[in-house]
Amino acid sequence: MIDPQLLRDNPDVIKASQQARGASVSVVDEAVAADSARRSALTSFESLRAEQNAFGKTVAKAPKDEKAALVQQAQALAAKVKEAQAAVTAAEDTFNTVVRGIPNVVLPGVPEGGEDDFVTLRTVGTKPEFDFEPKDHADLGEHLGIIDIPRGVKVSGSRFYFLRGMGARLEIALMSLGLDRAIAAGFEPLITPTLVRPETMAGTGFLGEHAAEVYRLEADDLYLTGTSEVALAGFHADEILPLEEGQAHRYAGWSTCYRREAGSAGKDNRGILRVHQFNKLEMFAYVNPDQAEAEHERLVAHQEQMLQDLGLHYRVIDVAAGDLGTSAAKKYDIEAWVPTQGTFRELTSTSNCTTYQARRLDIRYRTESGKTAPVATLNGTLATTRWIVAILETHQQADGSVVVPEVLRPYLGGVEVIEPR
Image (tube, rainbow, N blue to C red; front, side):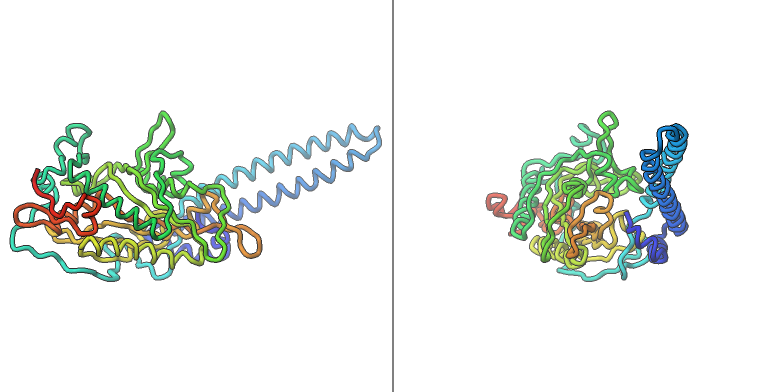
């Protein structure tokens, strides 16, 4: 959640963030009022409880013949304390409900607007050119016998698929390359749970406006994760982390991911660009808030090195405020060129969530003064199934074969070209 102190001291900053996101500004005033009511209720409760404690000492010292009357007064006072405590609970519930509905405060410099208002920071590599009519990844996958969409649909329905033979090996190679590089960069590998409790899903901010995209198992009250970010964020919930001298906790989570893709009917139905199930390797970092922006740039650098070595043409964009997720204060997307679509398509997202998730999940570090404060959390994709789309289309040849990027060949037993089965 947002910083209550910032809400109290400078609500205009939060209002400006809401304005940039195209979200409700009035909710900030509601949160300020709810915070004031919560603190007022708490003050009344503490005053009554102090009075009760003092009166209890009076009763204990009173002569026997006066105690009966005093006990009655003590009981009446106890009833008031109980009512005041209930009022505090109600006020806190109201405050939490309102404030949890406010997304993270965007960082200075984030572009205002919606999905189309991003700012391109850089474009890297050379756009692939062909002296033949290029096939899209779905046709290539069928021609090569490595992607089987009809049988995926037969077994599970739309937006499902099988990766076969070299298709399966290509995904594992891609993920393994990312994992090796993450380990070399100091990330600890984790195979994460893909089912999480509601408090973990809510803590990462995925049960707000994006709740419709999440699969829920009602009988078990568990959620299927759409990214290992959820489990990685919950990994250190309710803990105090050592972050002395710039120390960070970095993890690389490998998991299968599930998304309902609600509201995307008819969009990117062809192929494996937008599907219900896929694999992903996610970087996740817990850092001192002062180090968050530098960590964000490091995560993007890891992603860019992967895409450059895979021979992909891409651009890095600064995502506009209205297109940020609930938890992100700033997000960079990296989009690769997809030749048959004649446009860039998102391959990675990298978000600085500042202290938003940590406040919800109670993840703290100890400051120099000895007090505790929320850590900052960041996440970014290092490899995922969707990358196969750009790899196949970029490196295809006239005969329908695909050249394997050199960095992936050691993971494929030295295979240099994927040819039809």
